[in-house]
Image (cartoon, rainbow, N blue to C red; front, top):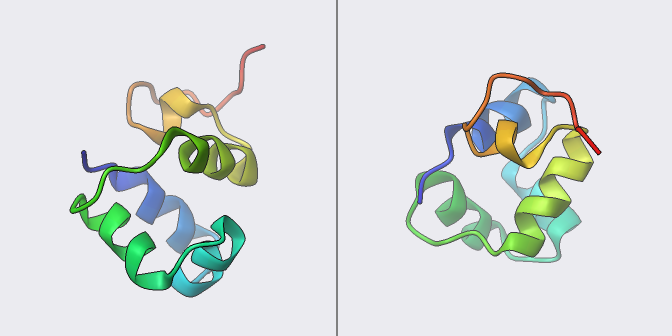
Length: 71
């Protein structure tokens, strides 16, 4: 599945794929595959990215335009 927002959020934060991959503890090539939709992103990585960018999973995956995290 392809999630455009993971790339958009990274670019908006002026971060490289290598930096985000290091945060997730994976290779840059694996992260690149996530951004291009060539590899499924594990839930634990989606949660880590949502936490990192302080956005909801729904926002990160394109299900809503609301960035707010609701608890």
